[in-house]
Amino acid sequence: MTERRTITPPHRYRDNDKAVGVGNAFWDMSERNGLAGIVADLEDGVLRTAEGHEFVNFTCCSYLDLDSHPKVIDGAVAALRRFGVLDHCIPRSRVQIPALLELEASLGELFGADVVSAISAGVASAGLLPLIASGHLGNGVRPLMVFDKYCHVSMAGAKPACADETEVVTCRHHDLEFLEDACKRYERVCYVVDGADSLGGYAPVRELAVLQEKYGLLVYYDDSHSVSAYGERGVGYVRSHCPVRDERTITVATLNKAFGTSGAAILLDGYPKGVLRVIERFAGALSYSQPMNTAAVGASLASAEIHRTPELTALQGRMRVAVELFDTLVTTAQAGSTYPIRVVPMSDETVIEAGRRVFEAGYYVSPVFFPIVPRGTAGLRVMLRAGHTVEQIRGLCSVLVDVGATPAARPAEAAR
Image (cartoon, rainbow, N blue to C red; front, side, top):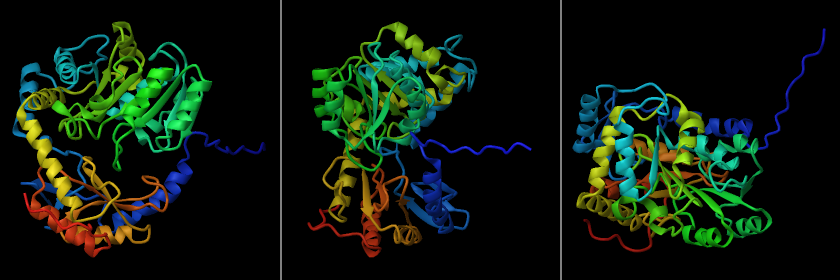
């Protein structure tokens, strides 16, 4: 009998053995300690499990609480009644109802860009990045694809597909020197990076713009964590600071976070209609019969209208006050920034136990560990929202200090 062969994976662009082998132990520990797989009903901003445990969620990306806004809910219902269908299940390149076109026109005016919608930012990146790698989205030249070491898995997961089209490398976090050197050696370079990191902080947008102007660097941003929460009319950090508004800057942003609805928006500048058609026809799942459903479209249209009113500015202000109050009580590396995420450092050995104690006290913060963060940099991730009260923030911070967080050096500011 012929001996059957075993396969040794190359692990050039991903390593599930490492990610699952190390990370799953932390996930299992989280679940055993009641910090994962939680099921709870939401009422008046407080979650309640079937066992009766009540807690305030401090790990939610709806930074402005628009996901529960009455106008957003009503918008979803109104769209269903207006268009009479939930999912028009056919590729939009063949037949479509007017819903997506209305949404893209509204978002295009809001962001000042040509907008293509998608069911998620992850689906958008999985479809767009290989087209960039092949030169079909860009200036026609196959670029060196440089992925930031800490770019979100929704982008990093496209490395193997991109590697079938061009060269792929990974650089250190925000390594401008590496990027400039690559720009000097390659005709075209594309840098793939988060505009706003899921663990706090912004990309060096202005510095990258210098490289864009000098060398033609193409930058692909996922700005999901700052859209709505940052900038006039919620255009996000990238659109607020990047002066390069042409085919050298591509931004994708989810509508699920601070925007408060569902789906994603791809923001493009300077591309002809023919390129937009290529995206519809060849960008992976964007070309399947899986567009945003009608309820999501209606909710998003309603949220876009809120973005055009002073209410958005007020919500952004409330979120910033919550962030500032937290910074007066607990020390983190992100303190002082407008970013609504804070990571309270803990060791790998203590992070799960600390998270459990915080949860038992009535607050949920998510333990983050490898492969979410590099080994040895575990912590409790806190996400501040416009709807958090002074009492809730102070209560959380008191418990965080009890479980090992470092109190802020300056005295707490007066309550809002």
